[in-house]
Amino acid sequence: MELAAVEGFVESLGDTVLDWSYKGFGSLPAPVTVAEVRHRGQGPQALGLHELGTPMMTVDLSAVADNLLQMSSWCGEHGVQLAPHGKTTMAPLLWLGQLMSGCVGITVANASQLRAARAFGVDHLQLASELVQPADVAWVAAELERHEDFEFICWVDSVEAVERMQTALVGQPGRARVPVCVEVGAAAGRTGARGLDAVLAVAAAVNAADRLALAGVSGYEGAVPGSGPDAAGLAAVDAFLRAMADAHLALTDLYETARVTVTAGGSSFFDRVAAVLGPLAAPEAARPVDVVLRSGAYVVHDDVHYRDRTPSSRGDGPPLRAAIHVWAGVLSRPEPDLVILDAGRRDLPFDLDLPVVLSASRSGSPRVDVPVGRATVVRLNDQHAFVRVGGDCELAVGDVVRLGLSHPCTAFDKWRAIALLDSADVLEPRVEDVVLTFF
Ligand SMILES: Cc1ncc(COP(=O)(O)O)c(C=O)c1O
Image (cartoon, rainbow, N blue to C red):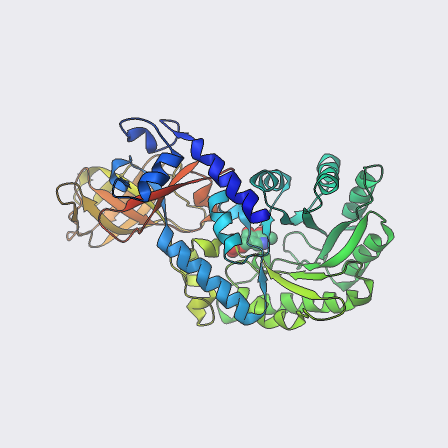
């Protein structure tokens, strides 16, 4: 049901006309629809990446397919489930791949993403956040009432949040109790109840609210101060996850739903989540416990931040491949050691690290590789990248550079249409489909 609905939504996006209003696609001789690109992508007439303009963001389908498979087998082997964070991509085509690879639902960050997810056709949704505005709570209640397949869970971290939800729900049609997890927080961290006493107070408030049902505990180790891939950072992550486990044990007799959810885990420390919280999973218990990861970035991975932080870099995680790139044209080499590209802050993520130069090519028949030698992106303006190069760099005006990115979450939101390539590792990538995003 859910898969068919999301598939139907993706199919309906085929009518989208890719014209000048989608960066890079205006370079085609005439506008094409997504369905035409997809159809051509299945045969010898596929659009070539280099028929599109620069800058252009791409997703490598073969890498995504590998990541989906690797992550789903890893979760299976470790007894954890995955409801990937959809905010990473906000791309129904990629969510469909995630659901098809066995994910149990999709996670979203706020009420707008929740509405988008419902429009995409997703039935199993976790809002990894508090829901405190009455209009949003009322909308969820109405949606639950209208669609019996819709399964929803969200977080509460204060008595106020519980009372606001309860107040907004009283008087709403339907008898449904909305399942909520108590969010566990860390001192100086983000949201989340601080300490076991606070967790118990929130849980008691949920028990007292007849339109809410206590359904589990939640937390996000990625927002814990001091978390990181070194020994001290991992110790901070583990301590937080142990506090979540303690909270779960303390709430055992207070749960009010048939199944209990224990949820944590982005893409940096999901191995620690499986190690510390995994043992709480009890699929066969009278009140089954599901341990649910919410990793989002894993689906496309990256060439900088996640490359260095993913569990596989520590030797205990699925091998992931970077699937996202931005292709930028050389506008100028105004000084021998400086190359200026036509992609900037509007096109590239820069909140964690600057992009990295991976390779370059030059048009011609056939297209040829251009040795880039030592080449480092040192600065970004709105529309330009500054690349410091060595004497061994052969880049010239008009060449196209493939940039590796850092942080998928802040790459996707800069692009409404992204070319889906058969592979980004070949000289003439074929465009197989188009990934549309909805931020
Ligand atoms: C609450 C929460 N859960 C899960 C994630 C997913 O983590 P990642 O982006 O590392 O996959 C995030 C990311 O910010 C988050 O804020």
